Amino acid sequence: MIDLRSDTVTRPTPGMRDAMVAAELGDDVYGDDPTINRLQAVVAERAGKAAGLLFPTGTQSNLAALMAHCGRGDEYLVGQQAHTYKYEGGGAAVLGSIQPQPLEHAPDGSLPLDAIRGAMKAIDPHFARTRLLALENTIGGKVLPADYVRDAAALARSLGLSVHLDGARVCNAAVASKATLQQMCESFDSVSICFSKGLGAPVGSVLVGDAELIERARRWRKVLGGGMRQAGVLAAACHYALDHHFDRLAEDHDNAAWLARALGEVAQIDVLSQATNMVFLRIPDADAKPLEQHLQSQGILMRSTYGGPTRLVTHLDVSRQDLQTLVDSIKAYYVH
Ligand SMILES: *Cc1c(COP(=O)(O)O)cnc(C)c1O
Image (cartoon, rainbow, N blue to C red; front, side):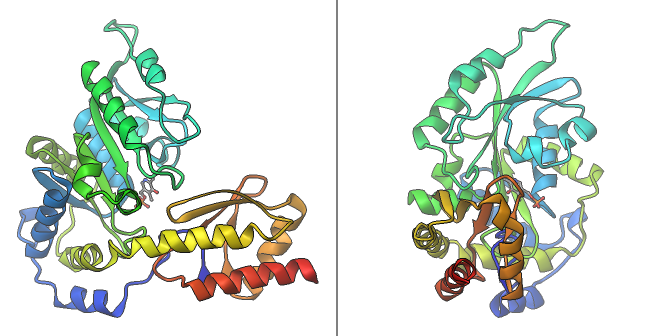
C-alpha cells in the first residue's frame, strides 16, 4: 500500500521495534518508568523548557495544556481551522469548561494581531475571561513566519495572556526553517509535540513547559484517563523517532515539493499549494470518486474531502518511487 492520507499511518521500523523491546520499564503513574523520564527530560531540553510530560495523544496533550492554563469560564483565542478548536471534539468546552474564541486565519495561517487585540474581552461579569492565545505550527502544512510568532506572543503577553503552541508538526516546522526545536518553542509557555506524525512513532505526544504548568497538566492527564503505567515501551519508540527520524523530515518535504511539481504537469488537476510534507489538490468533482477508486485498485490511498481540496501527505513510509507510481497511475487514469 502507498498511503498518502496522513503522516499518522507510518509503522514502527525494525530499529524502533528493537528499542521498544529493550526499554526499561516502571509504573509511570508513580514516576517510576526510567524510559519515560528520560524521554520527557530530553524533549524538554531540546525544546528549551524546564519539564516535559508524555501523553498518549496530541488531543489529550493539548486539552490538558488548555486546562492547565485556563479555568472554568475562561476563554482562549484560537484559529477557526486550528486542531484544538475544530478537530478535537470541542474538548476544551466539553471537558474543560473553557470557551473558545475562534478567529479567522490570514492566508499564511497566522491570526492577525488586530484580530487578537480585538477579541480581548474587558474584565466584566458579562464576559468570559480571556486567558490564552493558542497557535498551531505547522498549520495546514505551512510554517508560521518566525517574526509573526514573536510578535503575536509579545502582544499576547502585553495583554496578560499565556501562549500555547499546538506543535503536532513543530518538528517539520523546525526542519523546514533550519531552526532548532528550542527556537521554534521559545515564544511559548507550553508546546505539545507529536511523535506519531512525521516522526513515525505509533503513539505519543510530549507537552513541554515550566515545572508548575507541567504539574497542573499532570493532574489533568490523570483526570482525563491518560495516566499510563509501563508506557516506556511507547516512550522508547518516541525517543528512537527523535534520534533517527527528525533530520530525515527534510526528505518528506523534498518529496512533497517533487510531487507538487509532477502533478502540476497533469492538466486536469489543480495543485493548490505545497508546504512542508503536504500537497493540496483540486480534483474535478466528477473525477474525485472514480480517481480515488482507480488509485485504490492500484494500492494507493489518498483522502479526497469531496468538494474540498484533496490532501496528500508524505512521510517515512513513502519513497520517491512510490510517488512516481502515484503520478503514473493518475496519468494513466486520464489517458484511458
Ligand atoms: C494530529 C494532530 C493533533 C493530535 O492528534 P492525535 O491524533 O490526538 O495525536 C493535534 N494537532 C494537530 C495540528 C494535529 O495534526
